[in-house]
Image 1 (spheres, rainbow, N blue to C red):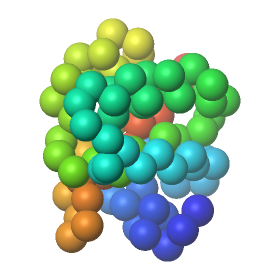
Image 2 (spheres, rainbow, N blue to C red):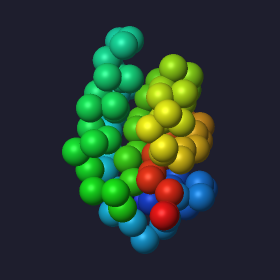
Image 3 (tube, one colour):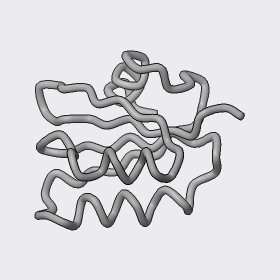
Image 4 (spheres, rainbow, N blue to C red):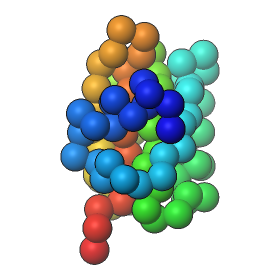
Length: 90
């Protein structure tokens, strides 16, 4: 995990010791960031945290994450809007 990703994850309630997967969708036009994120999530292990870097808050993604049972938090940085997505512990 890069220092920047580590620092962003630390600002959220995501498990800090979990493996992370970075997904940068800043250069993609809608609806590709939404589609890329939703395609990537089922491919990850349940303990992996997906860290999505976007150029704006992914408002249309949030209800889809809720429907699929994911927790998430969005953090604004100087370079991106970062949404940290994880499966809650069961």
